[in-house]
Image (cartoon, rainbow, N blue to C red; front, side, top):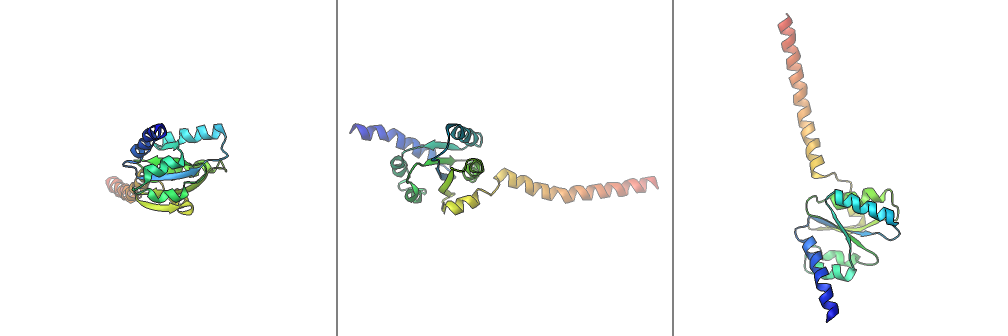
Length: 163
């Protein structure tokens, strides 16, 4: 009985972290050095991503009956969980970028906005820029022609003023 009582707060913590999450990514961290793990935790924290290591059975209990239930099949071996409530691509993007320097780090799978992706799918998701980056690129592409048009009109007005 005591064991069950000890597990309930951990399972509840996982459920609280998953509540309202836009994406969850499972990560195989076996083989990382302490320094690499510390740097990864710092990078995820800076990106607003919750990165924690839980026992697979605890995660299994927490995701049961949720949109993240499909992740249960990938909960084998050492697994860390990266969760984001704001940016759907952030966990995959941050971990994949870090994996370029830490070859032992691997993306296992994930759920992004309710859709399950395997390792290959999550790797593709990781290449998608954040929403803010996409919006700034879009606004930049809209603003550029308008700015050029304004310059041309201004030059024409200056030439006519000189004449």
